[in-house]
Length: 382
Image 1: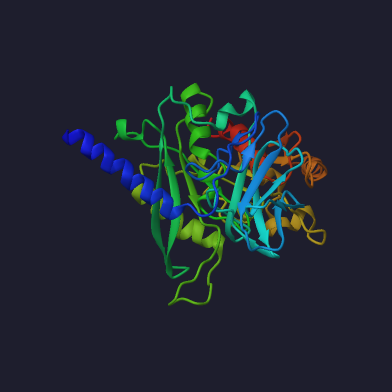
Image 2 (image 1 turned 60 degrees about the vertical axis):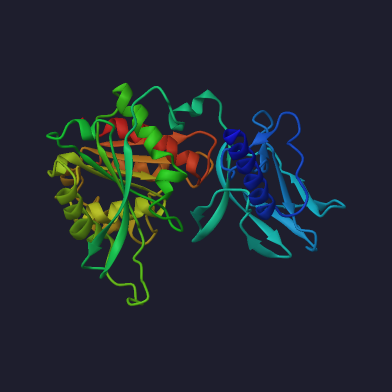
């Protein structure tokens, strides 16, 4: 009897709470062939994705709105309203992978409350994953292998004058081998994103877990810092150089805090988009600290710089670069600005240790960068 009373009470409370937070009419389940996106919030049926057609259905409950659109992948889709105030639209077929999007309600861009929040373009954005087939298993959670940990911590920057956030991945074996030291990859996000990008949108932990378990990559620590110079209520002016923050504040903190191999041959740096640009600048200014580097959609040389002057002379002395750097990995999507000609120019200049990689069918987006990481990590520290 007591158990029955407790069960009834739990159901009643759950119903009351559900009613409190549910607004407007119930949404009908997605039509056949469509499933709730993996990026949805708990119990949200929409957006719904069709894995075969790669279309997405969006629904918004807003009875008093006059006009609503979905802004997805560079196109605005008009939504239509039914008699209950539910707005609906179906997208065109999308490229597989992760996409940011926004809901425009009477011209104002807002997040879709049905999705998790992903920081992109300098605001908390909605996101949707258009699923790949089995070829995407490398960035999905594998219940059959050991898993590492991502630790979200802060370090003090004397240069910035603030505490700064950083996420650190340690491999599954880290706690089981208390006397072992590890190489370190520093991995930077792009413009408009933050230190959580590689963990959330990039699925870094799943990628690294799989590569390490299969033996393709050596066990390593991956450091994912904030690439912005931030302010707070006391420090209103952003100060310092991000490359110096990485080299003089972040690296010493990581070496003090984690069991790291501290010589340059066991330290790598890579980044996507602006993070690739920061990688080139940081390596150029601190060549004694890195032997491996990668740019993912991030090799930019301004026309007036030329190869010899780019990144404060990083490539000027080709022989010195070849001796200092064991690998220069350059990756891009085939549907974005392609640095292939620049890579050929570097080779002609005498840079020999370049590996060029293209992600087929992708643009300036997270699937390009997941694939780049999956190719880069197995090539370093060997």
